Image (cartoon, rainbow, N blue to C red; front, side):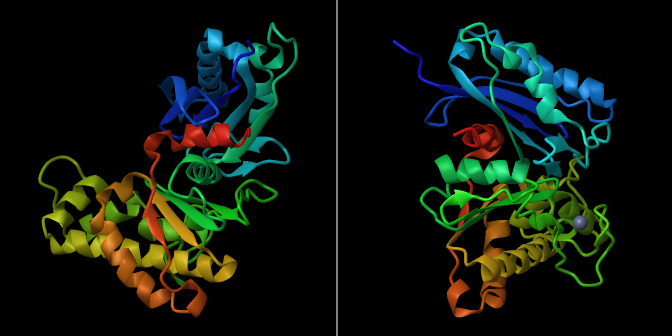
Length: 315
Ligand SMILES: [Zn+2]
């Protein structure tokens, strides 16, 4: 009996590089992850990607793999098969697709002897592909899927399909300007959504405004706990993040006529501390008849969305 086809998935971020084999229902097998040596030379980062592929290709299930999908921190360049992740400085225009295609187990499997196709997308696009395939965007024809964590990434589903755009970065909402004369952003622009709504921004703003953590944790997670306990400064920082997100979401909805918005990432685990002010600000910004009452949902796939999305790219 022929083996049911599997996809090999690799999810590359600034803190970890994860891999798994994914079946036709989005279930993971042989999941593993290794720390990203983010500040090391590019060859050292590639060596970790190859270690992940070494381990996956050592499993008997590898024989059923029909394609390799990669979701990577961006920006990515689909045409060139290259990536330049902001937080992996050793990779600039790094030929990731060619390097993965050159891994011995990908270049030529024993049976049958042929190379596996390699697909690439930015992590926001991969998350959108995952949530559209198996998560909270399932069944939506037009959806915006956001990851709000250390940064803010996003991807778009339009007319029933994930739209990576020619470069693979379409829908990258984190770097649209929501504050006209806002702070300079590392991307080169200013007032970017990411600079107001990311976990990093939430924690920085809370600390600047006088919030003091109970313990050593000075991250957005600790700000969320304070906000849930009623701390006014912590609440205000989440409110500002929610306001920025609402402006970006309303703009996207006006632009492409969305019927669903899905929000995941570590900051979204704050729950009502984020989603209650978000609903309030969306009421103010999403005022046109066709974007009123947007269907906003929490992501369903958690930290495995990157892997499931990398596999979804191969379908
Ligand atoms: Zn920016």
